[in-house]
Amino acid sequence: MTRFPLIARLWAVILVAALVPAGSWAAPFAAYVIDARTGQPIYKQNESTRLHPASLTKMMTLYMAFTAVERGQVRLDSKFKISSNAAAEPPSKLGLKAGQSIELRYLLRAAAIKSANDAATAIGEGLAGSEDAFAQQMTQMARALGMRNTNFRNANGLTQEGHYSTAYDMTILGRHLFYDFPQYYNLFSRRSADAGIAQVSSTNKRFLDAYKGADGIKTGYTRAAGFNLTASAQRGNKRLIATVFGGTSTAQRNQVMSQLLDSSFARVPERVRETRPKPPRLIAQKTVRRAQVEPKPVVAQPQALTLNASAPPERAAPARSASTAAIASPMQIAEAVRAAAASSSTPGRMSLTSSARPRLRPGTPATDVAAAVEMAVSEGQGSASLVAPVLSTSTRPIPAPRSRSARTSDASTAVIAPALPEPTPTERALTGQMSLLASSVPEPRTDTVILAAMGEGDISEPAALEIVSRPQNSGRNWGVTLGLYRSKVEADRLLLQTALQGGAALEGANRHVADTVRGFEANFVNLTKADARLACERLQTRQQECRVVGP
Image (cartoon, rainbow, N blue to C red; front, side, top):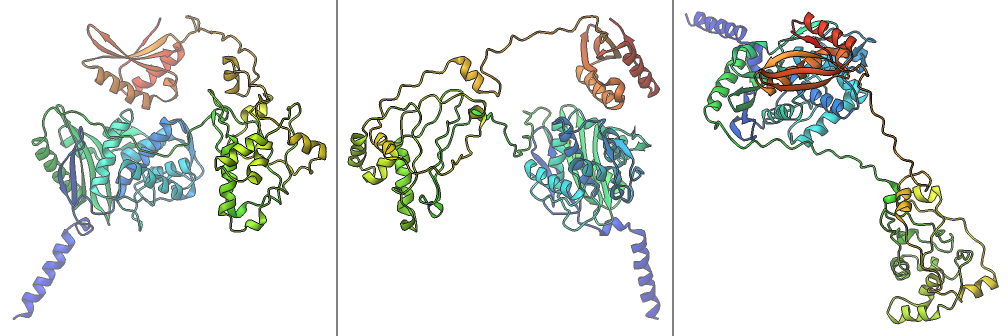
């Protein structure tokens, strides 16, 4: 009698397990909601728990691609060659074949709208050379954006050890996508798009159609992650961005997201002071003109200082900046030599008296420097044996020959001359009679010389600039108008969306919104007559109203 109820209970457990979606067992629930205008949190639950992001990863892949386009590293029409690794990615996929080439704009549409794994991998390999290298760059960008609990191992979000993120971090990334790249954000609101080799449909179409004000951004699902979603919606002046991790199904995830947004819209004020997110803080190398870099004194390490084994460096002309040249005084040089001698662990190897001295500069007068040596010793600068060799070869600077190599040499590079022979008795006599005050004061540099030193050309007067103007009848005075709209924002948004879809026909065209008495007119200008007609014909095939306008 007791056996039958036990078997019935077991079958009930099995039936429940079969009916409950697999995603409900995958990961704990997490959610985070912010006011997009200020970044202030409104709701949070397990927002910092590290979970599988699934295809939310592609948000960063797209962010990296948008950054590369805006920096000029690639163009939307740049063709990426598909590798066998990208072509072999599991669904969801665009259906790319190994060896084929496809424009970046189609890969972006496939990754953003269809969440195609092969397209995301192709983007990463095309930008960084390999998916591993691209994943490292993605993680570095995440740190720069303030995503502290995110680590990427691939470009598509497929489950991999060490690949994780949080609801907080993905919400921050969604906000950066909205503010940093408004010209590309409309990709996330499209229900379908042309991806070159196929027409793709949005994985987020249900939520976009069902929730009032929703305009993006990205879904994600794997068995380990569950059903994830980062969404953005606007109602009036209010805009929210939210992320949900660990949904049990698409319908349940969308329902939870709708409830979170509804309750959050009721809690935020209609008007606030907008605070845009700070741009990512990336390390960039500045290009500095070499002629403008002031030289820095190079002090040898004590353990590497062996003055008897090598000759002193040849006195090279210092690199001059646009305003003045930095020249070390004799006392500073003597102090550096004395400090090196004091800290050396092998004092027996240092011998200034046996070091070869540089030859005298041709045409340099020589007088006595004994007084200068005595003054330096009396002021505590060091012994006469250390100071005298320095002062005897230090003179006030005279203008060095202005050669091309001297102007453009790197000031931070030390030039070492070959060892010179011991001076002759005559030269030693002349050395002892050198004067620090006998050399002439260098002539002030004129503005012309300063300007010449900043480049690599000669020092002659620059040639007059020739102003070339395009004739009015150059032919690029045609355009395409898309009609009148109630607001400038609406007209500009349509122009941006059309430019992404227009392809080569709209290349070179400028977007222009004309404020007329009837409304705001959206126009593409700076086109030839042939390009304007071609662009309008292609737009009409996509059910976009347009009209060619001439001069």
